[in-house]
Amino acid sequence: MPYRETNAYGPNFIKPPPDLIDGEEEYEVEAILNHRMFGRRRQVQYLIKWKGYLHSDNTWELSENVHADDLIKMYHKWRPLENKTRQKNER
Image 1 (spheres, rainbow, N blue to C red):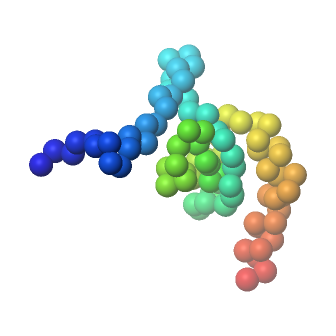
Image 2 (cartoon, rainbow, N blue to C red):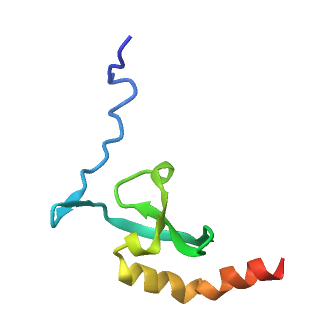
């Protein structure tokens, strides 16, 4: 049977649509939760909490794809990049 929303359970979670910037879909970053060095090239990735989305929708994104310079600066104020590389080398 197809799903039908009922009053008993309330409305489904509605995800906000992306913004269109220069013809490209862009989602707003709410917070940067973590970072890691990923792949053979050891590229920086950030775990992103998207504004208006559940935590289950968080994704790992390459640093070059994250357009939230102020949030990145604030994040690295408390979690410098060196910490991740140093932790891995100490193991």
